[in-house]
Image 1: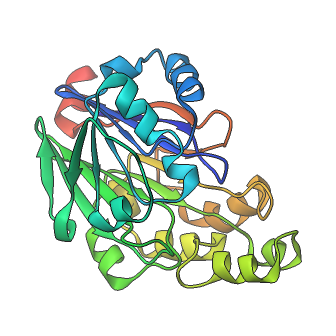
Image 2: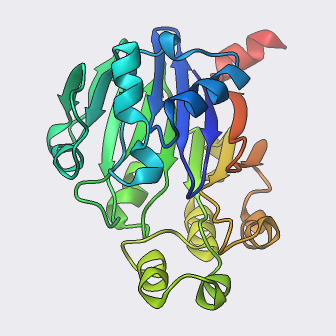
Length: 261
């Protein structure tokens, strides 16, 4: 299993996951033309996709979902709350994720996880293939006990570190938006992400990607200052950006890794 990002931040989000049975796009927060261009940068085409998954209905995650699905005749998976929260128009194939029940796509196991975020029925996801798990964990205001239990044993983790509280407080957002972003149903701060990593079994991680970093309320320097004391044992730590996301990362089982030596 390998994964990459088309972009990560408040202007658009999309994660590409590929395994031997297919490929899925998680969210599509860009126009169809922009999505096609970003996929091409990864030597990929939307015609290679098996489906699109949606985490929640905010525009930076769903802007291009319906149009992309219609153009390439792609199935779309989302919770009922996410579907009923806005008008997506006609979709070629809609699959509703009821009650956060796990499901499979061509041997890829997908576990939806309920998260505290200011959307109608948001979900983040854990993807498991051949015993290896990738956890996608962005767009949540706090690490609930449920989230901590579910994400405790992933070999790869895409984790939000959205804002620095001081930058958010002194930044350009109106008070209501500052309160929303920094609240329990908003986005994770650098310190919240660091606290989660401090409790995480870091020895199991092959890849850690820090994502959804705000361009207005955060900086790479502040993110690294908060997180780097806890990521020293991770073989590969990356910081996703809005414009380029991140390139392909491969998850490899210990057996395969030893065979390659």
